[in-house]
Length: 345
Ligand SMILES: Nc1nc2c(ncn2[C@@H]2O[C@H](COP(=O)(O)OP(=O)(O)OP(=O)(O)O)[C@@H](O)[C@H]2O)c(=O)[nH]1
Ligand SMILES: [Zn+2]
Image (cartoon, rainbow, N blue to C red; front, side, top):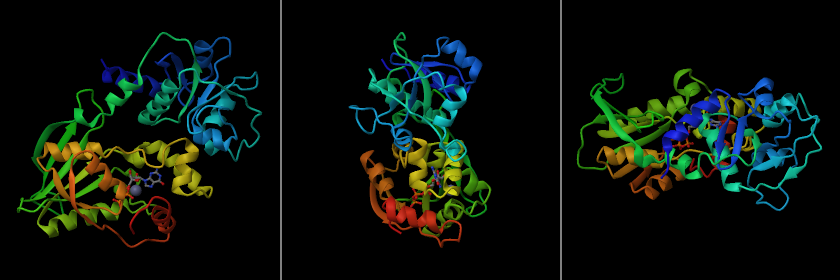
């Protein structure tokens, strides 16, 4: 039996700086803990540090014979105190604290639990780094964490008329799962006309959608998507709560800080220890199915969105390009998407 509710509790604990157990690893999150909590968690100062493969690569650390892309366990030394651990966890601090090491990587007995722990950090919106003590009584399983993210658990929670500036006849529908994960929203525009709906998967971008950030193209894409759906007769805008391509707002802002240091959007994610794109488009497929729309025309330049919907059982009858003019601040971002993430721009 998987227990997604236990995962929800663990996410809450991590955000408060409390320890959790995944597999047989007791874990204290570096980002939200402090020296006193570390002392209570690990009185012997022996707990090694668990970090991501991407972070380990920057620190020139690999896990000897373990898989090159798996998490890495860094042996604790007397000088590896809480502040040093923080500098190890957070690549934003690399310029301020360049001298690190020498480090020694330890074998990981429970590699599945270590990978699941990093996934849990991402879901909690935290840096993927923990003090990790092996040998704990079994806690969360990788399956519990996967179940928490399982799109099949989404339900339609409420639906109402919502006239918006660009579409006065719109309706809104909101979705969530029973353990209170993210609340996703659909804006339904116009009346079905026999054709598959024109659909836009819009991933939350607080900076672009609300503040008018020029670093990305999200704000103009959101407005243009609603206008295109309106002009085409009918369709659905899905507003997916997958901020920062699924790494959360604060981690996205960390990626922006790395971009200020010269890294592009792809390398910034990797250096933080995340996948380039951590989104789960099965969520969008489940919402479309709950709305009775298993076949769509998709407004996107991103082939992963087409593949993600199709893999989750929604047919994409047509891909409709969704390109907007660049500005001087997002030119490089758009070029990186074209050159490094296969966007059809
Ligand atoms: N991690 C990270 N996320 C970013 C960055 N810039 C924008 N985002 C996020 O990217 C998501 C927007 O991507 P989308 O508009 O869906 O764009 P896309 O995947 O390029 O696909 P299409 O626009 O459909 O072609 C939002 O969640 C933004 O918050 C960045 O530099 N780093
Ligand atoms: Zn954006």
